[in-house]
Amino acid sequence: MANVASEGAAVRRTGAGRAEHVLATLMAAPASADRLRRVLEQALVLAGASFAAVYAPGDDPAVLCLAESVGLPGSLYGLRDGYPADSGAPVAETHRTGRPLWLGPDEVAGRAQGRRTPAPDFSLAALPLAGPDGGSLLAVAERPEGFDAGERAVLELIARAVAVPEPGPADSDEPAADAFSLAMDTGRVEVGDEILRLFGIGRDDFDGKVETLLGLTVPEDLPALMSVVEPDHMSLDERELEFRVRQPSGALRWLRLRGRLVPGGEGQPARLAGTVADATKLRSDVTDVARVQRLAADLATAGTVKDVGHAVVDALRKPLRADRIALAELENDRLVVTVLDPPEPEAWPELWRTEWRGEWPDAPVRAMPALAAALREGRAHIWPAGSALEPGLAGVGPGGLA
Image (cartoon, rainbow, N blue to C red; front, side, top):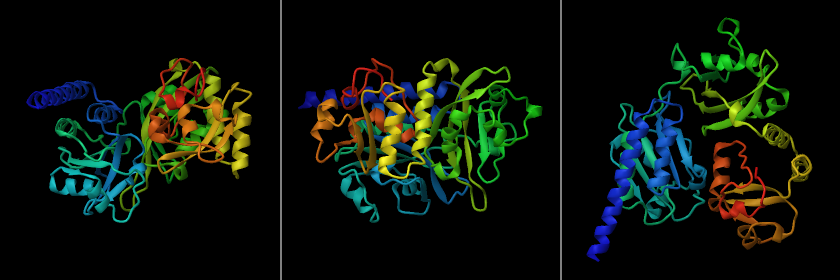
């Protein structure tokens, strides 16, 4: 037993040492819009977390807001996008006291205040952040025993390394070159010089209106873009979308928008803040991506399940030569199928067949992390033929997957 314990300690030291090296490398790199996300991802890789997030004071310091998250959707664990700083929520208590909390399933349930937590038997860790404004690191482990000593050491390193994002363009006279900040009440937008270059507009020619930028978007891509930037569709989770704009020369350019809704303080409007980057060199499947994005816009106007089914099959079966089409709703932690074509069980992966309880199958979203990531990020994912995927998706067919 002594040898086993010694080997376990060595493994834990190696995990923490690896985390320290990885985090030092990330923090030494130039600041970027995705650095916080990359730091948080180490909680998934090195601490075995299924979800990790940073909560920090927003424009109103009395509220802790979700600043970044990685992993499965936090809603699977009954987590919110914000908590009053004086509440009994673990992130709020840790923020106030500066002490970490390591909670097992019973303790988590006792603090749920009657909110239903769809995922059973999960443990939760909340650690204080070292920044001047405080905040908390939150991590979830889908196991009742929670995080072991080595994983706790990794989370402590991450909490010390986390840097909450600096104030966005709305708080600065000089926005970063690739950054934007859109006021949701007026449509006025502040943009960096690189974004204007990508749209082909000179600084002196830009009137500060978001409609001016949207007017340069390829009409086919505009509905999908509007579904991201309209207030009714926004959430505090980060959203990502690729769309095309037409240059003054007539050439098309693919752009990638990443943005998050930032709540306003008392009496202040919310804003959409994020970055826009050139994605042209990454796009070889222009037509297919545009079709998928147009389908998303069509689904937003479908009135019945039957309408949705027709829209999906019509949009994908013939134009993309799709062999299999499935449409499913996320109910708690499971995907419940509402449209399946072809309808025969043998046409679908083994995971789906084993969960075939009624007319259509349902499957746990945790068994398909690639799909869970698409749901969390709220954007289309395209995998070419030959991509390595988990069994729940790889068995769909030999070709590409959207």
